[in-house]
Image (tube, rainbow, N blue to C red; front, side, top):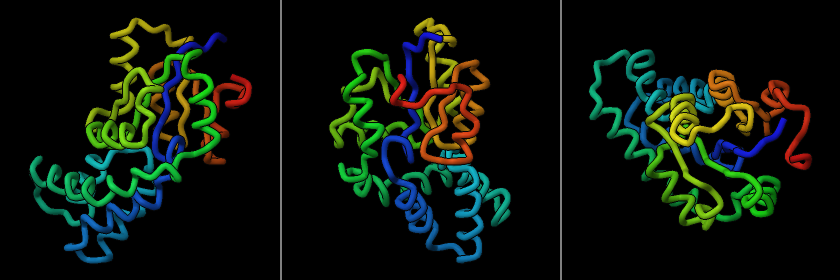
Length: 204
C-alpha cells in the first residue's frame, strides 16, 4: 500500500478540544432545562464525530420534541461557535504527536482536514493557530464527512487506494469505509481497534 494523501479529523486528533466542545453545547443551550441539555451531551459524546447541525436537529426532534426551522438550527450553531472559537485558538491544545508528524511530513503527503466541526469556524481557528499552510484544504460541516471525502476524491481524481483517514471516532471509520479508503484510529482505544492498517504515525 502506497499512501500519498492523508485526511485528518480535527477534534481529538489535531487539537485536544473535547472538553471545550462539551462546554459549547452547555453554553448555547443554557435556556433549556438541564435534563434536556444532559440528554444532548450524552448524544454528543456517543456521536463525537458528527456535526453540531446533526446534533441540534436531534435535540429539537428527539429530546424536546418541538418544531424547528433551519434558522433555529443556525441560531444555535452560531451561538455555539461564539462560545468555543476563541477558546480553541490556543496552541497549547495542539496534540504534539500529530503536529510533529504534520510539520515533518507535510511535503511528503498531500494533507487535508476533514472534520465534523463547522467549516468556516474551522478555517478561522486553523489560520489563527498557524497551521493552515500544512494542508491542501480544510473542510467541515454542514457537509457530512463522507460526502466531503467523496467530493475530494472525485474533484482531484485521487485513487482511494492511496488515501488514509486518521480519526478518533466511529463516524471517521464509517466515512473511510464508505469511500474505500484506509483508516487509522487515533487517540481512542476503541476506535484504534477499527484501524484497517497495521502501522501507526511513526511508520508512515
